Length: 155
Image (cartoon, rainbow, N blue to C red; front, side, top):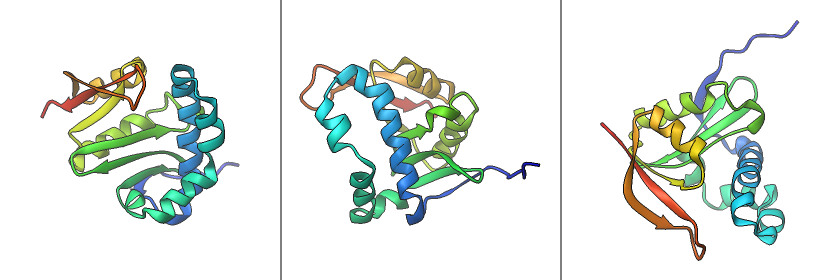
């Protein structure tokens, strides 16, 4: 018999670093690699040990991160000031309301602005469902021909 665990959104802890790195990497490879096609970055530089090292070197990343945890960390959101910096859900758990729950909490914590890849319509729809609107502002993604759209919360 499976034990029921109440899902909770809680502050990230150092012991979450490996799981957060896995979730982030899976999402980047699934959604961003097909657009950018940079093998070296996505399969050599973007690794779990590298991201764990970043969490150790920059503990403020964890300090600004909330995780969705129902016994397994299934997603996370990072809010720094009024900016939602990252929102990722383990791809195996997409469509279960985890991203929405994390977005609600991010807005409660003051998240009012975010960047979303122009070619990521699924993310744009999620953010719109949670009160964000696309602005006319765009920002180039590094030295590519791709753009982020700046979205702002209506309230």
